[in-house]
Every structure is written in C-alpha cells, then in structure tokens.
Length: 387
Ligand SMILES: [Fe+2]
Ligand SMILES: [Fe+2]
Image (tube, rainbow, N blue to C red; front, side, top):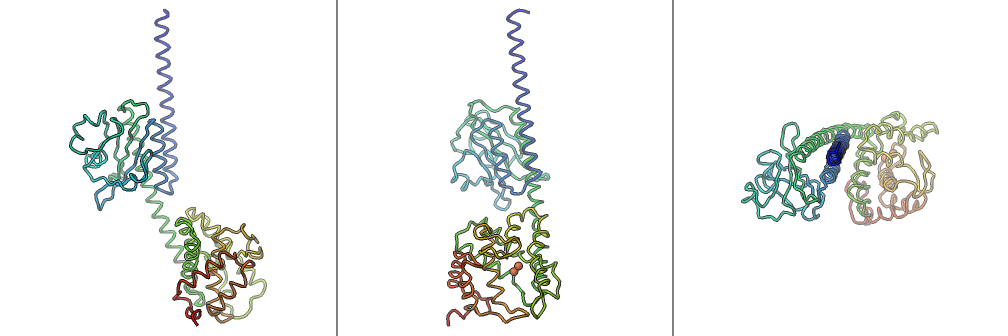
C-alpha cells in the first residue's frame, strides 16, 4: 500500500470514528432527555434541560422552547439559553410571524442556511439575527401542536445540516412526551390533592370543635411566612403542609379525639402518633416531599420537648416552627371538648410567654405583627385586641 493511499485510509478511519462518536453523543443525549421525560415533575425545569442539552449537542449559543397560548394564538418562551431575561419575559410571537411563527403556521421542521437570503422570511421580519443559519422544529403532544424548539448561533459558525434537523425533530418529539407526561402528572396531582383535601375536611367536620381548623392554620401560617419574606415557592409548600397537617388524625379513634374529659397517658400517646401517621399517609405522594417534613415536625417545640422526634431550635424545619405557632393559636382560640376557647388576647399572651420555649421567638413576634395588621374574622374573639 502506498503512503498516499495509507493516508487516505487513515483519514477515512478518522472520519468513521468521528461519526461514531457523534452517534454515541446523540444517543446519550436522547437517553438523557427520555429519562427526563419519564420522571418529569416540573415542566419548565424539564424544558430548560432540553434547551441546555440541545445547545450543547449542536454547539449552539442560543436555544429556545416556545409553547403556544391557544387563546391568544401566540408563542411564549418557556425555556431558553443564550437570551436576555427581558427577551425571555417579553417575547410574544404571533402565528405566522418570524421563525417560530412560521413553524407554528406550517407545522414543519425548518432548516435555514442564510436567514437574510431566505425568501420565506424576507417579509416576515426585520429582526436582526445573531447568526444566519438556524434550525427549528414543531412540538406535538398527542397530535396537537404545542410549540416550537429553535436552535441557532452555532459556535463554529458552520451552517446547520439536514442531519442536525433530524436530531432536533427527535428532541422535539421527546419535548412533546415531556409536555404530555407533565400534564398527566399535574392532573394526577390535582386528583390526589382533591382527595386528600376532602379527607382533611372530613377530619375537620368529624369533630365540630375543630371545624375549619386546617383552613385557619393555613391562613395564619401563610401570613407569618409572608411577614417573614419567604419565597412563593416555600409558601406554596407550607400551604400544602398546613392544609394537611392533621391528616394523621384519620387514624386516631373518635372517642379519643372527642373525649370531653382529660386524656389518659395512653390516649395522649395515641394522639401524638398523628404526626407520624400523616407522614405515612402522604409519603407516596412525591410531589408533597417538601411538605411532609413540615407535617412530621408541626408538634416539635423550640426547647426540644415536643414530638415525635424531640428536635430542637434551628434543627426543626423553619416552616414547621411557623406551623407550631399557627396551629397552637387556632387550637387555643377554639373551644375544645375539655375546655373553653381562650380569647385572642389570652392566646397571644400565651404565645408571648412561650417564646423561646414552645415557639421560635422571631416567628412568635412575626405572628404578633400579623395579628396587629389583620383582623382575622374567623377568630372567635377577633375584637378583643381593640378593647
Ligand atoms: Fe397536629
Ligand atoms: Fe392542628
């Protein structure tokens, strides 16, 4: 074999290896995305992962996923890489306009070699493109058009190829599966929440003394959280925890819950189990993960004398410390089989007294501020403070 033909052979082999490597990378990419599709919980996070992975795969600087708002007939950016926050927030693309609008109108994948020379876009937009070559593909979910994935600005300055477009179409298919799975997950989640809320309501109404208890506790807890500046994400987790905090009482006998006299030690121990029973009931609902730890710890005390784990101070989840104040206040201001309701003032005095022992002092103070700002209409003695 001559030296020349040997060199040709080597370069052929190198090309083959490069091709194989590309294939492996593409397979890895598709594997990663399909794994995400199988376990999708937060749609926007999954779409962001796709945008990032697609940009990496194409060595592209800009990638975006837009979903259609069917009422307004416009596309909104749900995930993107390489675009300004303001662009992501404000971009609205009407069907028919610009590249995404073209894909939305014709529902076909699109490969543009040079956007400035492409007749399809000559009259559609005077927008300046970062790079002349781009690819875009429609996203379908169960046959219905849902949005568009765009990739542009190859870092190598090369133009996109038909092969790139095929890969993007495969990615768009996975995006469709992700949207479908997220939608199913959301429906299932709502169904679970409806069922569980109905159960909580059943507990609250089973015993007229604790009627609407969960609802009141939710209101107090959310107000405290706002007062302390918690993020909306944390507030939403706290809200679910507050709604469901006593769900474990489903496993406590009626005669104990409604016993008019003092509880025996054994009966008291059974009541205490409701925190852990609640955890057990809710554990299979993975979307409640954050709330479950709060529910577990809503009867912990700041001084470590609470239950079920005897956690102390900062070791108790912050939201559970909020719950402790909210829960106790509602319990104190509600009539119980074995005692009359305290007035708002009496209950607040008790909260002040228990600062640092039962309650986190900062949270107790935050609640006092909430009460002075709000007139809780469902509190039985809500006018007391003004006396
Ligand atoms: Fe409780
Ligand atoms: Fe409670």
